[in-house]
Image 1 (spheres, rainbow, N blue to C red):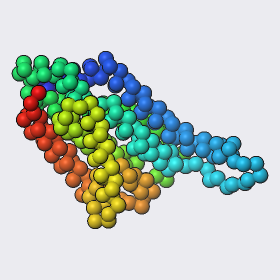
Image 2 (cartoon, rainbow, N blue to C red):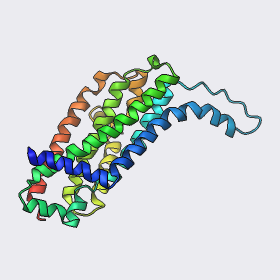
Image 3 (spheres, rainbow, N blue to C red):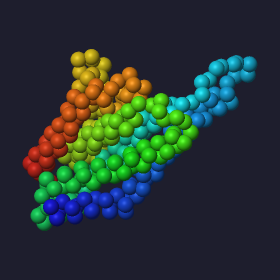
Image 4 (tube, helix red, strand yellow):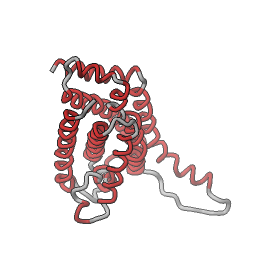
Length: 254
């Protein structure tokens, strides 16, 4: 347990020293501010760039518009940037040889995987919470939030999908020592989930639903019960992927 805690502290300190922590926190804070701001300014922007003589009835923005922007920004930019920054966390240490030295001194490979997953998940949670509460504060200030349904649950769903992607790129790290392999592997998995979402039989069980059906939750078109199965499958998948990563890493020649 002491080595687990020490390695988590080491991961967090390294993220601080390499500025990865502050870069991702700043990015997510910006996304949290940008979401309600974009919704608020959209009618003004339309009017400014509308061709002369063209009249268009643009509805006033609502809280829903702000949250739509939030989930679009986080799922399309936030998660991708997070993966780019943190996906090489294991492969880079293996290529530099710094991790090999610690492993030869008695650090278990299982501890490495669990501690890295925990530390990166903590950073993801912090960044995501900052973006969510920033958007929440501005949205509740400008608009009536009572028109939006399940915004806490929708936030949880996207957060859980982020945890899944962390497990995925850690698995990519143990497959090869190449710096680009984890990013490539994460991209392949993401595209595969998108393709599977095209089939009705797999749509209800596809983890990508956690990141793509947030608007349906916000509008009330879908309820929390529609996500019960996919949430459990995602949680199970996260543990299976991490345990598989440990099994492969234990057999890997360094």
